[in-house]
Length: 196
Image (cartoon, rainbow, N blue to C red):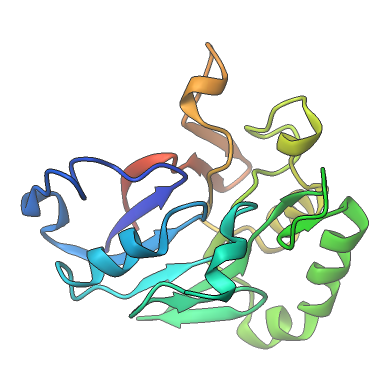
């Protein structure tokens, strides 16, 4: 299955100068947050693939105007053609933003999902906004990753953790793809195509 991963920055080749070939064969779109609702809604016009999203730390505006035609999977497991996808958006709390959490609050969100995780038999993809702790995160408070995501990876062994939040321009040593055990970790900043 060809999956389009997007996060943080609208990709000009998909929006301003749409090259429809970039969407050919895409069967699922996963948005890691911090993208304009209009961008996600625009993409629904050019692909029949479902567009699933979680909230980024700057997505407070989605409360008033969510992306049309897209599916929010915050705190739930969404199954698409047998692929189990868990959504956990938001970032570390650095001010009073709606989509910001402490490490303890994110741990509590994961604990509340234990029954769903057990009932589904685990997950195949973990869709987040922030990265996991020391797995593609940064050192400033706003961009530190969540330890809870490491626990999910180590216990449920998803094939993929996809996140955004840490932009390519933030680090001179930016690395898009990482690995932890059986789980491939991809920073979707901009866009990336992944074959499941």
